[in-house]
Structure formats: C-alpha cells, structure tokens
Amino acid sequence: MIEQMRVLSFTHFVQGPAAAQYLADLGADVITIEPLSGAWERREGSGGIRLDGHSVTSLSVNRNKRSVVIDLKHPEALAVLEPLIASADVLLENYRGGALERLGLGYDAVRKINPRIIYASATGWGSRGPMADRPGVDILVQARTGLAAATGKPERPHAAGTPVVDHHGAALLAMGVLAAYVRQITTGTGTRVEASLLAAGLDLQAESFALYHAGRRRREDLDRHDSLACWFIDAPYGIYQLADGSSVALAISGPMRGLGAALDSDVLDAFGEKDRRARGREYTDLLAGVLASLTYPEVEKRLEPAGFWFERVADYDDVLVDPQVVAEEMFDRMPVGNTHANVFRHPVRYDGERPSVTRPPSELGEHTREVLQGVGLSAERIDALLVAGAIAEPQKGKVNS
Image (tube, rainbow, N blue to C red; front, top):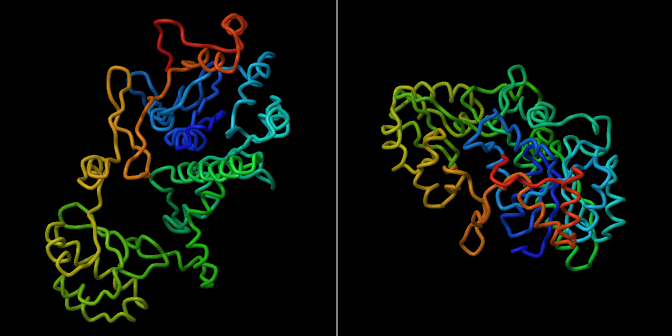
C-alpha cells in the first residue's frame, strides 16, 4: 500500500520499533539501523525471554524489516548514512533528546541532506518543558498521567497488565508519519513529526479527562467499588467473580430493567433506573453477591435470552483458541529458526485482507551489504568499512540474534 516509502528506523525498545513495524506491514521498505551489538529489543527484550535464540520482544515488533548495522560513533558513520538519508522518505527515531544531534543526525542536519524528509521523533515526555530530557517508559507514564490511579484507586493505584502506552504511542507515531507522507507525496514538503508517550498516555484517557473536569469531579469519585471497571460509567458496568472460579464482564446495554428478574433476585429487581445510578455502590455489592453464587454457564443461560451484554473473562491461553479471534485470523505462526512463534498480526484489514508476514525479524546486520550496495557503495568500499568496524554483517555460518 505504501511500497514507495523508504523508512530509516533509528529505534529501540517497543514504541519506535512497533511504529516502524506498522509501516513495514503496509509495504514500506523499513531499514532498521542497529548498533554493533544490536538494538535493545534484540539483545535483551522484556524478561530476557528468548525463542531459538531470538528475543520474543524483537519477534513482536521487528517483522517485515531489513537490518543494517552501523556504528553511529565511528568517524565513517555519517559518510555511510548520507546516501541512505538522501534516498529515504522518513527518518524515524526514539532516542533520548539530543542524542542524534550529538551524532550529527539531528533534524536540521538531516534536512540539509534531504529537504523533503519526514523526520519523526518519539520521546517519553515531549521535546520541551522540565521533563524533556528525563527517561520516559511505559509504567512511568502510566503513573504520571493518572492512568495507574484510574486503573486502581488514588490510594491504591495499579498499572495496566500490559504496556498499553507503548503500543498506543507506536500507533500514534505511525499515524503521524502516514499523515506527513500524504503531505510529502502531494506537495513535496517534508514534516517534523513529534510524538510522545506522555501524549499517548493522556490520549488513552481523553474521555475520562473530559468527563472528570467537565463534571467537576473530585479524587474521591475515583474511589469506586472494586467490581467497577470505569469510575464514570453507571453500575453494573464491571467485572464480577463467579462460583466456578471464572469471572464475567457486564456492560451497560441501555436500561437495565429485568436484570434482577433474569438473575432471580427480587432485591436487584427493586432498583429503578434512578436508584441504580444514584446508589451504584450498593447495587454492585448486591449484584456481586448474586453472581458469586452462579457459574458462568448459569449466567450465560440467564442473561443471553434477555439480551444483556456480557462476556466471560479470558486468559491468554483462551485468547489464542477463541473462535472469534481464529475467525478474524488475528494470530500467525511465524517461523523462527527451527521453531515457530504465535504472533499477533497487523490489526487492520484492507480490502478484506490483513498484511502478511513477508519477512520474519532479520538477523543482525543481515541486509547491511544489500542496502549499502543499493545506494551506490561498491563492494570494495563496503569491505573496507567492515574492516574499519564502521559497519557489520553476519559472519558466514553464524546466526546473530
């Protein structure tokens, strides 16, 4: 879909690589520029978990890309990078503020080489203000933006069970690049794109902030019943434990008249719509007690015919075999060395199809020679750069993960 786009990705961890992966899924030629030791998600990855020598974090964010190894601190680095920058549409980076500037790869320097470049930067906290130079990672942003307090309670905050800010930040960064690319191909103009985890953490809560401040709420209003999943949505919206050890999520499906009758509870049935809203905590306490005596099949048998909205709470094992997930073809078995990994596919369909995995995560430096030859460097020049340690490629017969 964007096969003409070339992206130089100076990224590491999750937010930047995942954003580049979205673009690669759509057909962009994404060239990841890695240090001699490999990017963090290749070397370490979350939890240090590896599959056939590959970091599972790298497996989740680095498909469909090419890998080039360049020592950015080497005296020859800029000479190697100049033809790459000249041939690129996008430079994508998520280094700490000022890091690329010190290496001669800041926005102004890159624009001199390629005036139409889209220079897209992702930071933790943005490019200005008192925190611009501080390290910013998912959990710190969840804390700073109020997300942890809203997920738990102000006095007992909880982080989300997955790095939601990282992944939402990646999607926002890719969105910004695509918007700038439309401008580039229609006007020939480059764009400075800036995204941050701070903005992603706040954007995830846009509705919550609007309701909180417009409704003149206080911190105490976030101290809701443990079953409630969202402080500003009326009861019985939330998650409830059942007698068989499973849990059920209930959502609002308009007026909740008849829920008490469906559950054979006269006490719940006595709550009118106004009472349910005004006495939400009391209502959910009673509902939690009723549901705690039922199994999930019993809840399903009672609520499904009445048209109430509910779902069983799944774990990760359940998700992989969920008939709806399978029907939507959301996971793929990607080859990894001598085995396979179940990985989530691109999240959007285009003309009924999801982009496929055309290239599993690359070996470190696998495409160094191929890419540099493609921008005009001779085999002799590449060999000299390899000897000088400015670049690297895999050693024959050795797999670099």
